[in-house]
Image 1 (cartoon, helix red, strand yellow):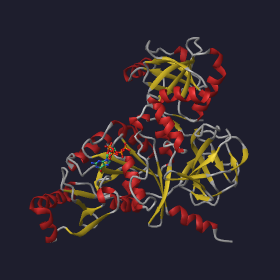
Image 2 (cartoon, protein in one colour):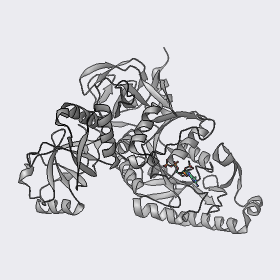
Image 3 (cartoon, protein in one colour):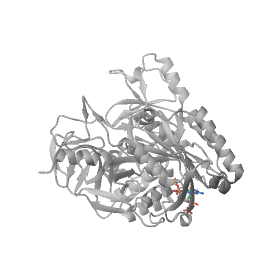
Image 4 (spheres, helix red, strand yellow):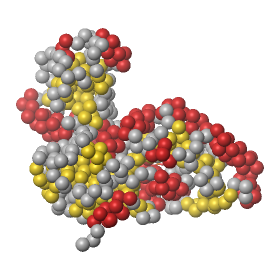
Amino acid sequence: MPDIKAEIKKEVSRRKTFAIISHPDAGKTTLTEKLLLYGGAIRMAGSVKSRKANKFAVSDWMEIEKQRGISVTSSVMQFEYNNYCINILDTPGHQDFSEDTYRTLVAADSAVMLIDGAKGIEAQTIKLFHVCKLRGIPIFTFVNKMDRASKDPFELMEEIERVLGIRSYPMNWPIGIDGDFKGVYNRKLKQIELFTGGEHGQSQVSSQVGKVDDQVFADLLGSHYHGKLCEDIELLDMAGDEFDKRKIRSGELTPMFFGSAMTNFGVQPFLEEFLDLAPSPGIVEAIGSEIDPESDKFSGFIFKIQANMNPTHRDRLAFIRICSGKFKKGMSVRHVNAGKEVRLSQPQQFMAQERTIVEEAFAGDIIGLFDPGIFNIGDTLFEGGDNIRFKGIPIFPAEFFSRITPADTMKRKQFIKGIDQLSEEGAIQVFKQIDIGIEALIVGVVGALQFEVLEYRLKNEYGVQLRVQNLPFRHARWIKNEGLDPRKLNLPSTAIIVEDKLGRNSILFENEWSIRMAEERNKDLQLVDIATQD
Ligand code: G4P
């Protein structure tokens, strides 16, 4: 019998599972595609379909999702490079920004923060960064679009620290700025890498490598660029932070890379350095215990559910992040939350746009399981019985709220079914107002576009037309105090008391100011902005 422990150890150590976080248009699709290009997963850039979700109406977007078979919101892409097995978790992007985006980060071991060099840190990057920070995962920064006019690299470093509160360590330094990007200086190897070729980004670029004081480079770059580069390097070495692997691993220091995903410049050096520094799957905390990824017992948790991807049959996929052991097709495991055995049939993995049936997988991998309606977000699956359970997945605070009812009261049953389904997928958060006797549900979402998706899906999948009344609230806070009667609180008149679907009391506020007012007026009140799924 082959040594299973040795096999698991080897497989875990070569896995790198990460997500790319960025603001719309920073170049996430382009960079993902280029990583696949270097990984040999696609032969020519342009193969990954353009995902201009933000240029379509919601209905078009939903149609596109369905036609493609796998939803852009569900893809995780696996490919091999230099004997590493890489899983890129594709956070749904753009205007359809939702809680899903946050939740996906729970399954990642590290994150690549992609920044548009000309725009710097943008709103969605800040939100996503904070979720990564909360988890303490390492964050790598790739400053993109260096082929065009960009902010000064020192200014970008300062901005990262000022806006995000994290120090950065440039791993390389751009040579020639403002649309004349010639290459990078690699600080570790103390060498210049000038890029050429790449057929405008369609294929891999070649590079010319050498020492910084090599006369060839001084001649090639011209005295202006060469002199500026030497000054910058000196300044970085003198005044910059020291390279510190421990701080990188704990998310206190972000290694920073400059490049251009479009022209492929700097993509390969980034990939290689990233793979070297990024962590393989590590220990995962469960309630009362810690799970070693190299354990021979399979374990994993469900972080995402996606239903009705195929309109002809109501299929539902549950996405599992494997945390330990070896997954084998058809294996039986304990569904800890339901307290029963389940057979993991029809497991699927995702390569670019294809779904394939997976025979085996290891910690760090993501697989999609056919779900007959038995899984929920946050569920634990374990090969060794009921004795472990992963901590619940956070529910991130919704920012937009609406009161919804079915336009046709005869459709109430379908309405409830649809709302339950979407809430189980984590696409919406459902609340009930408890301080007045209104029956209508309040739905909260992280991105406003989710309301349109909600209306579209309820109409198309459940035949229910909605009546939607937008509400002015922007913040939900859960009440932490046990046994406190929220009706006795002295709240600002604009706040309302609600119950989430697990019956936990929360308060909806219009602004930060009223949250502070509630806290001031009720000294013992403890509010939290993130709860868990269970
Ligand atoms: P996203 O997924 O983060 O939203 O970004 P995406 O890759 O779709 O890129 C957004 C736009 O930025 C695209 O242009 C893309 O070509 C461009 N882009 C990406 N990387 C670079 C880069 O390194 N340099 C430059 N100059 N541009 C870059 P578009 O005009 O919206 O679309 P397309 O017609 O080029 O496909």
